Image 1 (cartoon, one colour):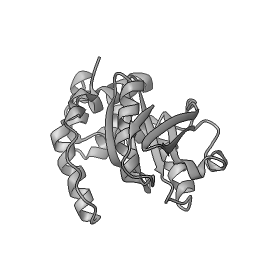
Image 2 (cartoon, rainbow, N blue to C red):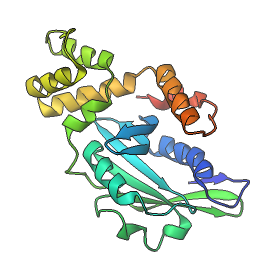
Image 3 (cartoon, rainbow, N blue to C red):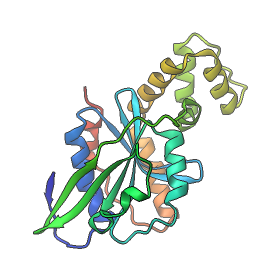
Length: 219
């Protein structure tokens, strides 16, 4: 995959948009969320696929591996498949820093273009747990799953209680599929507001909404 690039330095900001386009081409049906909280970390990108969740951690040419060990543990709790998206300066040593089941994408700049090459395909992550993935759902989404499985609404109960009840009453594979479906259907406008609020808190510029993300949920 190649996209025109005006600047030669591969920082996070230069990587994201070409990466989104690469993912859209590779996965016709997907939904992308940025900066999702997972354990002690924030996932750069969580991609909802048909029946699974994929995490992508970006390490630009300006980034180090200082926090990666903790990030890898958190990605492995929440995501069925994981990729590290690394700048070309990391190419020789990046696989030393991630488990063998992690995929690797290498991003470089050649003659004013962004080039993304898959160095290694991601394998199934056996450490992922539905009990962690369910934590990404909003209460309204949990309510949808309760109703779908003919369970009480538990209106007076906590979100944690509802999560535990669903884990108890619904089969793991079925619950995972329903979690994925809820994330596909999530109100993108509401998520965008939360994402913008987070970036403002961090003193980071708020990027313009990617209107083409209406296409992210595609059959």
